[in-house]
Image 1 (cartoon, one colour):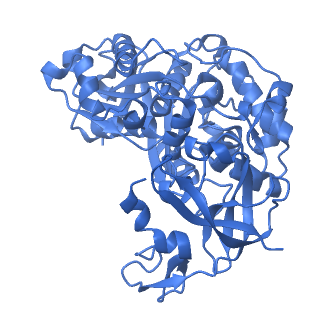
Image 2 (image 1 turned 180 degrees about the vertical axis):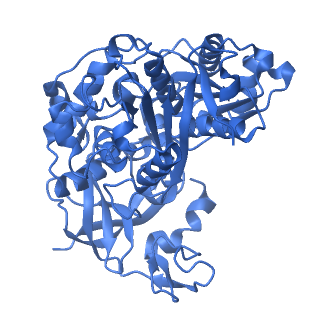
Length: 387
Length: 130
């Protein structure tokens, strides 16, 4: 198996982009990534695109070919493959690109993610997102995504010492980081009162516990490590790529408040990289809801179960803490165009490791991690990147 | 949801027909035709669940999909049936009434409909049993 490196990365701004189409979002992110890598279109061997639900959001399937076409690659007949695992589609797209290069089958591969969510109304997008859970036995009965994570939050708070205030501080921290990220959907800092006074979506989760509906795209270029310096002076090594699955329904999990797929993917990643949690300088975790960040920090092994709320309150996960979590602003503040999120996480870690993260730069960052979740934890992708 | 897709689940949705693996004794609702424990050695038979159970965790949904907008706020829970399996369902009670550990029993209710002139979906919700 060959070592793999990220040689370029690009990302659109995230937000409600009424004036931009699905295909233009992708073209913009792809062009930024190729320009960053100094790679020409004809050098691309393959293209993977993470996308959850173009079928529901813009009534378009076959988006691999669409994207290859509008990226100007149709005449080169570049193989283009859509990867779908709900909100983990981007993480899996990156993993497919890494596998393709590691295997030796392909050399220069683009891993992208794109979602155009605002062409349908809120009710329709809530229903489309419910397809990430079990349509027959969760969605049919009236489950929503915030509702499912709210049940995790209720179970967690019943069993562990997590206060409503500590949960709110996750959102406050991520908005602080988002305010320092030029691509973030929300670039305003908020205080705890804003979270606690926002309207209830699904008790105990409030509006400011939830990631938003977002349009956006991100792309990275990967290549064999031994060719990386043809393109860049700052290749970012892929130290581990891991993936795990679990039951599709939340109710069938071994433990409602623990994402066993996060534990499995995290352990596999650490084993593959020969590293432990204390080696990680910063981590982008899948905070689709504030409770999800709490669970992720614990399930990845950064602390014991029940401790992440206290760590958040003590500032350990803040930009200047011992373990900065979601320096991009996370899904909460940077935004969550579902298929693009996993790639945006890689984009953020790449920026940090190159020292190009501006006002949110972690000094001396050497090793970063990404954690991307599909549904309520039925798919998890974890990657470790290093300089 | 198409008529056929709803119709073929009527035994489960109306009468809580699940399955049981006679090899290991585990119960499955919704039904599984393949035992994750015994795999091909498992022998699967139908089992009618009594439907009684208790709330494991719950929420009050205040922003719903179009199908359920008119019902908000509604209590939604994970219920552990006495036979062991867990399911997700609405609880027919006020938002203040629900609590973890509360005993519940099944009730037959209208779940939704395909627009104003389409099929009406019936199924099982749960009500406090204390």
